[in-house]
Length: 235
Image (cartoon, rainbow, N blue to C red; front, top):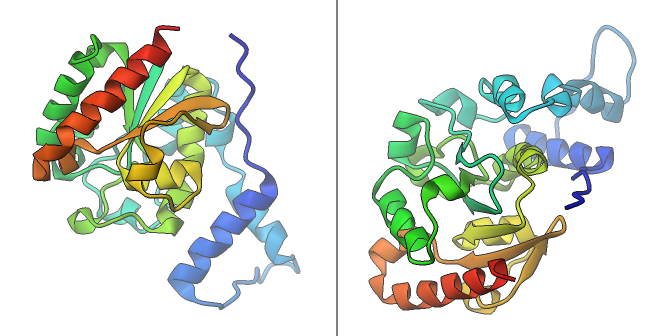
């Protein structure tokens, strides 16, 4: 299957970086003392890193696992890259690592991860059949909701992962993940039961397993979502 490269324009990278800087430092400008450069030139120079030229998924990990481009890089225990089948048809994407993931460096290994395993098994998939990761690679303090500046910083890494894995489908777990990927503010009710598009990849939205642990009455709806996903994957 042909898979077009997933590219983020220089302009979008600059906009993301500037939003992050404004969130952290306000409107102050940081000008190089060594020579006169425009703000855009300085940002482009900063963002030209080896990770963009990674040739394999392993190279990408090596180039980003020590990332400290946002404050989460200084508070994490371990960088949580992702795990699973690197040629998977299905990529499962959550929002951010939790405490267990931060300790082990692997995605979805706590109670929510155990439930995710059962959810996948309900449609005949093992964890080894799929690739699992999060938008953020570092745990936000106290499992708070990711900041826009944090998702802006990490999403290019995710897109690069997708380039290597080339999934046919994405399963977005939870509203934060869905809204971040789909760039909207729609409710879970309106997002469920529909096929969406993320960089040309068919994307399905369902509840995050952690939410199901708090609200077990949503498990029936999740089962419906998984059957819908299975039907699409079977075509």
